[in-house]
Length: 230
Image (cartoon, rainbow, N blue to C red; front, side, top):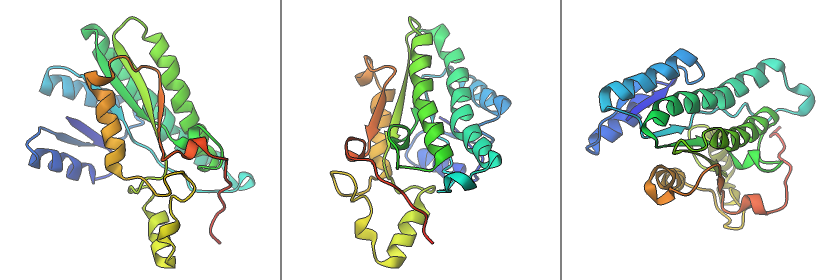
């Protein structure tokens, strides 16, 4: 596996894979830079003889900023990482997969791309864009054997969402996290990973162009309004 991220923590990911007996290379690069993404795909082909699966998982939240306080700069940064970077990963992965006649491209969208009230403005718009990208790319790659799907996580404790969990713990309200979904709890990273593994495997060979919600049922419930902490 080749893991690319602009954060140095990407090396820890690769190290964990190697410790488990796998092969992994870490690249500290920009997932929204065309040449960096193309280079990562080229390295995967060189080191492993081809590319079977691409998981476009990089993303930033942009924070919860009121409508009239949003800026072009923040919108541009969120769209650059969350949407343009995902497009680049899908594009370069598909270029490597189409000649082989098979491959799975997995993109991380969000429940915020499916409904209102689950994220900030640019974040929600970028994730809705990822869902549209997946649907459109799946159709443009018709007949190639390459599948493109999205995972739409709900509230999962990751590096990006950790401040939400830490603030709740500091207030003593951790038990309230995730109470808006029918399962009444937040999700774990492993629950997203298992869905990604399914989409990467031949078990999902007839799944294409889909946005799969892994959100405890949040996307089936009534919209909510998220306010900033003051």
